[in-house]
Length: 184
Image 1 (spheres, one colour):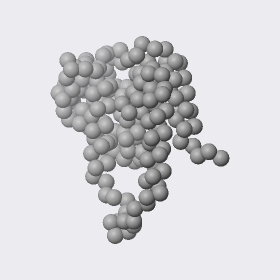
Image 2 (cartoon, one colour; image 1 turned 135 degrees about the horizontal axis):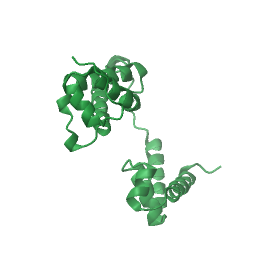
Image 3 (cartoon, rainbow, N blue to C red; image 1 turned 30 degrees about the vertical axis):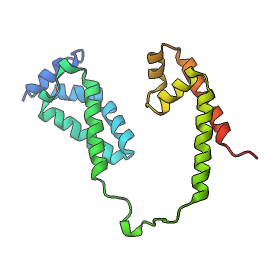
């Protein structure tokens, strides 16, 4: 295996080619560039430092064993690593055993009609407030909370300034809170 030091100015594609040749220094360079991104994605999904570190190691071991899995023609390395990390972290979540045994779980079979009625009233209030909001404000809230876009992504998609998007969402949320908070 070659251990010739890679040039830190090399792009990701060149480093992947070097890894295909067995260059450990190229792998170290990619690890230094992207380990924080991979770890952050794993932590966000798993919420556990030990499990996130395991996923970090698995992702880079996968890249070392099979560098041909990355196709530079289909996109950049950072997003590809983020997707691989997310998928691996979700797999870890699925394999986790439940935190409590089924026998230890208390299941209430009596319907709580009062709570159901309260929830129904709250939902109706929220729908009413959303319906009465200006369209731009309602769209910003829907994109953020129902479609999962960040404020920056909403700004880019709508062409509106980021500050405007943040203000619309914040003021809309304040209206929604006021509608569902119990009156003193």
